[in-house]
Length: 54
Image (cartoon, rainbow, N blue to C red; front, side, top):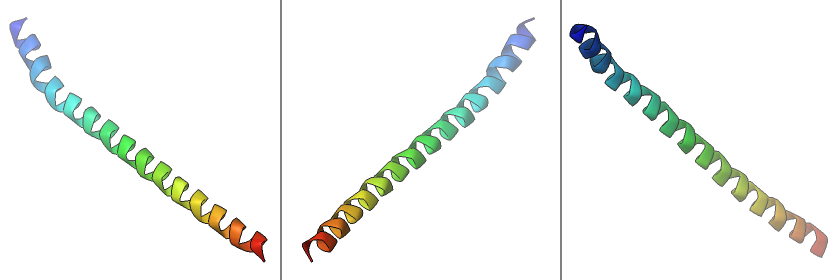
């Protein structure tokens, strides 16, 4: 019984690390995507202002 518990504990640490790493990378990708969307919206706004001034 103790051997099973030890095995579960040994293998759970790397699995938790893999899941956590994946979640962090996903959050970073979302952050970068939102940052790019904000920059694109700024450019669209500038373009609109320039076009309407003519």
